[in-house]
Image (tube, rainbow, N blue to C red; front, side, top):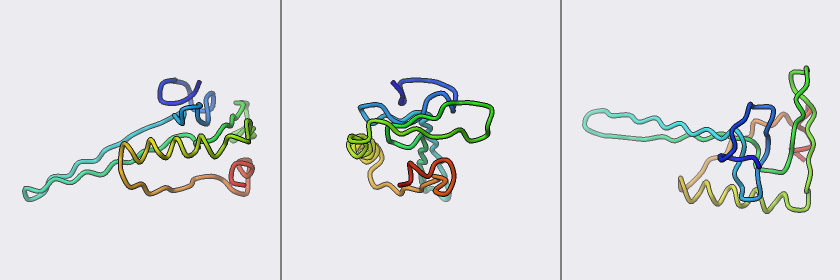
Length: 107
């Protein structure tokens, strides 16, 4: 199982588990105090919340393999529900290489 409950090197575990937990999940919080005011910004990043893998080899970007395609939307929705429950409103930024080896995930 991947996700926040499974530690691994970046290219050994990818994607999400059945609960929507993603591999390589990282949370960073920046707290700023100024003139008696306090503000916080939380940034999270992790593996793309789908069922996929990337077999590590000597190339910089190994090929992607999607699997369990009929349940992709379900795992994505579970992941986003977790994010919204933890952080409220989210802004998502895609870092997918939509023309290279990650193109299959983009589609």
